[in-house]
Length: 518
Image 1 (cartoon, rainbow, N blue to C red):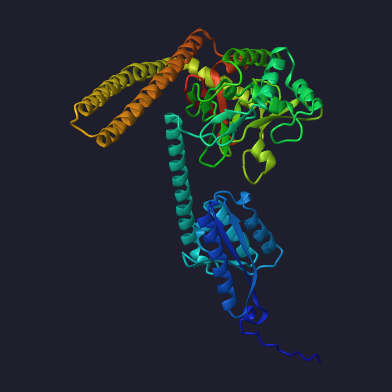
Image 2 (spheres, helix red, strand yellow):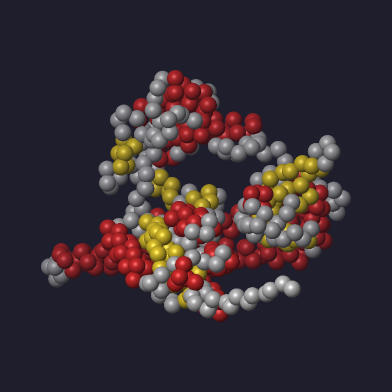
């Protein structure tokens, strides 16, 4: 008969016997000397804390310095620590707070759940949350949401501050373009590189393409700014940069709420300052080059200065994903690649990041035909009232507001004149005059900027009015559509937003957003 021996369970804490491998994570989001001292203090704190616990052994103190906490993939130390956790080299992680670990709620919870599944616990000192106690997860979700909201608020304040500097013309460029140097206050011509810039524009005017100009500079051993060789993209960047005329346009790009950078194609305001610095080329030369680039682009059916593929199809560059904000690309399939779908590039790169799968080309065309036929049928109920509203907003409220602001500027300028008279008569001293007049001048400048903004808004409204009137005319004359009209689509649609696998939204050039089932 077999003899069975019962071995009792070990009730002692294995982590004390075997030793708990502990790491710490620190992050500071600026690279100032004070933050560097703070980082050193955090490192010493965790080294002492871990060494003071019996059975704990220090793996490492991981730290990211001068890096934002909004994106996990941009923090090398954090990713290095996660890799070691996945390799089974770390049992426990200590960090100062949730906001130091991650300001992004989704990233924070993903990391916590992954590490918990790996058997790695995390302790947040400030909030006193230990992921060994899973009932803390709801509390963790709330707190990381607060951290994300705080990050969003900081970003909004920063954007507001930058926008105000754009408006006041006091924003300082972060890096000078090729041919200029920064003297601490403004752009100054680099006498050694300016002739190269002039030569690039001269070559462009002579008919040379960007690739030919780049080859010429490389053959002449002319060094580019950062790369080892000149590329056609660098040449195009120079040829389309208005800064070489002495002017500057602010807010060419912007960052969305998901911290992704986009080219500003009218979503945000632009701010142009003439004679911002000394010019290398004349406006006349610059304008001629833009005309040549535009002509060349139109011959290729390609947007000016674009490095993307040629626009050969009605939907090229027109479809965007409302979920991950990526563009859509054309995909062919079938035995002879005759079938066509449009796929979200975000989903193509990472299926887990975006759920929107490829949509057949024919379904989008059918949706457009359906939408346009609805407009034909209901134009009097949709387009006519919308046009009336545009006329009203463009003329009444805005005009009244401009009148009020213009009167305010007149009154402020009178106040400025009064202060000047008081100073001349010796009734106020110089210090008081400078203080009060400075306040008034700032109000005048701010008010004038607001007037310009309203005028631009009126111009946009006028554009919408024109586009709506044209659409009303088209729907009045058109018969019910039986098939997709490519030119009609290009005439009236600005872009198509894919909301889900079953719904999209047509953003029309007149400003209307019209949803349609796929």
